[in-house]
Length: 272
Image (cartoon, rainbow, N blue to C red; front, side, top):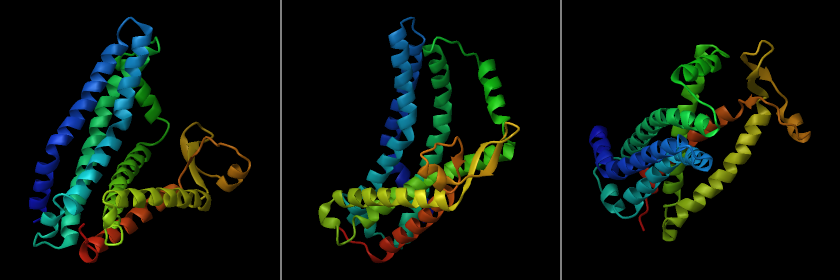
């Protein structure tokens, strides 16, 4: 049943997803070609165009998934979806799994698109970039930490990106329950905005509560080190160390949001 539901998710979203992927790719290619023109202003404009296309790619895809989730679950075709002889949590699980798959594919394609952006950026800044130089720079960057560190950070980044789907879908579901469904799409927007504010507070608490960060060690390699972020905040310092305390907060919050969305599907469905 889950595979059948995912197939329907694919059939319903494939057209607009293809458009978004195509536009992002086209803008990246056009921007890179502009960066290789002999005119300085056009070169910089081309780099900016390609950079924005890549930077906004995941956001646009996930925002589209969130709108499609709301429309197919609670708005236009919500009655059809909710009338399926399938448990609500199963429908949600299929939608979430499809959103996760699309997110991972988007991230992978983003990596591909980042390559011409790097070349275009180097050209726009008046410098050349060869494939050999790019590989050499990449090896140097990777060499500052063991391979397992980069694999672990990559896993965290992908997982947290998928967590963005959990936030969007939670907002769409909670904002469509009986007390807010009269607001239409305004309900999910309000819930997402409140969730965003709460998340900022929780992330700050997590960073302060877990005084650990990832930064350059004495030998120049990345290392986990102890940092008193509360003290640095009070002194208005900006240490060049990535805090690690927000990771557990995001994982816990994502788990709670998924659980609450399942409850909404199973017990609190309300269509406008």
